[in-house]
Amino acid sequence: MRKKVINSFLAALIIAGASSISAFATTDNGSVVIGTKSFDLAYANDTKNSTEITNAIVEGGEIYVKDFSGSWIDNKTGLTVNERIVPGEDGSQVSTLVVESVTAINDTKKVGDVYKLPTTITATLSDGTTKELSVTWDKVASTTVAGNYIFKGTLTMVDGVINSSNVIVSATLNITNSNVISDTDITSKFTDDNFKRYVYSLIGKSYWDDPILYSDVKNIKKIDLCSDLFDSNESSLNGIEYFTELTYLDCTKKSIKTLDLSKNTALTMLRCSYSNLTTLDLSKNIKLTDLDCSYTKLKTLDLSKNTALSWLDCSQNQLTTLDLSKNIKLSLLNCYDNKLKALDLSKNIKLYWLACNMNNIKTLDLRKNTALTMLDCAGNELTSLIATKNIDSSNYSIQYINSTHTTAIYNFVITIIK
Image 1 (cartoon, rainbow, N blue to C red):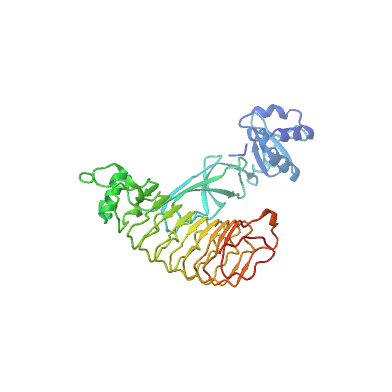
Image 2 (cartoon, one colour; image 1 turned 90 degrees about the vertical axis):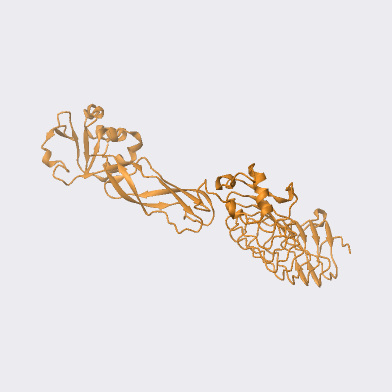
């Protein structure tokens, strides 16, 4: 099928001397040949194609128009010509097709699956045929975190095919935490009876008569065991992996020794203080913004993946190091009573509240922390506390400081409370 010819083109033809060309503008199956390219009149008369038609004229070549009877007319002379001199009638003409639509992509994968967006896509052309075209995506697909992701793709054209309507390829990727179907009975997964009873109360089912289905829990966003009416002491949160949309978890003052949150990738707030935890893996919880793991038994804490973290209380643990170089959004830090020997906060320029007291820190450099308004560094072995030299003391940045053994504070008005 020949491509459909335009107002600017018709104007160009009239200028070229074909006074009768407008008569063919209403011919649905009329054709125009420009050089070695063929267009139908409906396409040419569409103003959105004016640039393309103008470019074809500029490229040069004879212009011919087919009339109502199927005869070919030379645009310059207005005379009927033998069809054999018209490019394309002998097979040399380039017939241009238009992309009408493309096949949409809608895939579902699990967290951790290997997945790549396709490099080609099936396009339906203006003559009804299909063609595989290369596509370039606006971003790379990842299955790290559960959720729905939208991608936009740009088509690469080939000879004889154009995308005059700017058809965009769309792909939707749904990343799930589990292949478990909605009506799966997961009652047995809750091995701690206290936690199981809490879940029953949360979903409004009978502990004695009803099973817990995946559909009962998969959309629950909040678990607050501190508000448990039974005032129970859960020792295991097995089964929590099925709460795939969970954003808030408070298991403060519970006897849990392990906590697997690798499937709870939507989690933004975690309270697990006063527990028996010795390890805490949060590498999958990259949306986490608030973390309270104070008064536990942690010896290490890796927060390198938690770049959204803004609030951290890891006080009363056994940490010897604390790397916060990736947590540039951090605004509040309480690392009181650990075993830290050093604390690098040079990347945490949004920090406004800091309690690092009761550690073994000898040097504390806060020159980058110009937003700081509260500092407690008492009970350390400080020999050097360095604050910024560039802060106007009349607009004091640090309003409260509790420190001991401080020997060097430069050019900064502070209050020391021992």
